[in-house]
Length: 220
Ligand code: E4P
Image 1: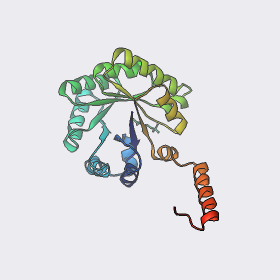
Image 2: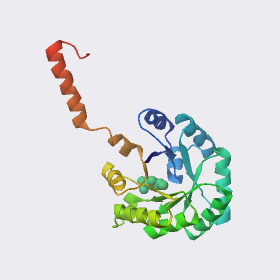
Image 3: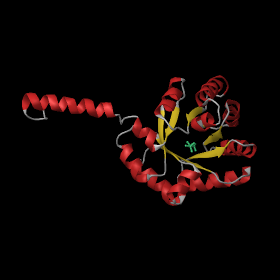
């Protein structure tokens, strides 16, 4: 599977790249806007924070297919192998087809339904990103959408992968992986919750306490 961080926080990527087996970093316009660093500065910094390895994802801003293609070329001018995120609208699908013909890898984003996501895969998107928590927040089932999309891709677009996005809890991410999705992108707080559990710290403290009681030190 592929694990991504969904962030524009360069320092956090540098720190977590040392710890997690990261496949890269995803961004969206809101995440980039929150950091206020323009993409031509931010993306090379993120690449450096990943140690020059891993894939980066950034999203087009135009509303027309031609504009999206132009945005995609600009993004590829900043990072030559970047994956271009394209919202799965009518114009977005047209753009994904054009970009696929140009050999530019895409991710179909803003996916709220399995059929919508499958269309982007059929158009040539390498990744499809269902918005798990946002679907839940609308009264749907994010996990069920991921499961259906996963099955659809396996049956009809095996070249494409689900890259599940929009998580608020580690449980949502785990459930996506359990239904077979091949890649996920996590916000920093959810990624950190994967390994930060009070019970783990308490267990280690107890080991040290017992060792100290027996040997008068905490080292081996
Ligand atoms: C990724 O493609 C999405 O832009 C992102 O994960 C959305 O997350 P949010 O619902 O927490 O904003």
